[in-house]
Length: 109
Length: 120
Image 1: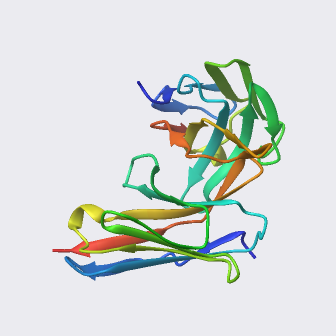
Image 2: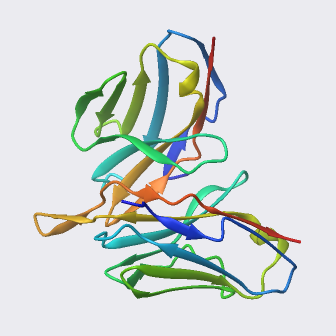
């Protein structure tokens, strides 16, 4: 079992819809959780971090963490074509991060 | 701030040659990470340094790979000899590495633009 599991996709949503990206993890010692966005041919960039159970909102993005279920998700409201990218879930523990393989999102105009 | 700087951006070499990738982290960041990304294996952590000291090199694939961080502003990843299966994008990332309650907590990692390595 991989430490971080994500649906590889591709996930396709129409413009203006809500995109839901999910991630499960196996390491209960993980202390911090991140969502990175990676455009094709570019490097990953952080879009959300979350450290405690519950929801964290930043603009159109909401991260949700449930440590008991070992589950973290990212919701993108009012999806735009510019949101089309691969989204990497990462968890941090002991000074380093472990990344999932990513979910590719396509937002169709 | 200039961000994480990597060089070269592209490298094409022949099997058996030595390859050296370079990274300059963001000034003031204490942690530096080397990753490799391929379609088949995703983003893999190769090695990371904290305060210039290698902390975890368990991701280094084999003895052909070595990494150094002689000072806080420079790191190298060397492959000798290179093989076609080493073809990938190599990312360097740095992190400010905050201390919280006596424990290090992983903070945001800032990635460089990557080096696309092709070994023929």
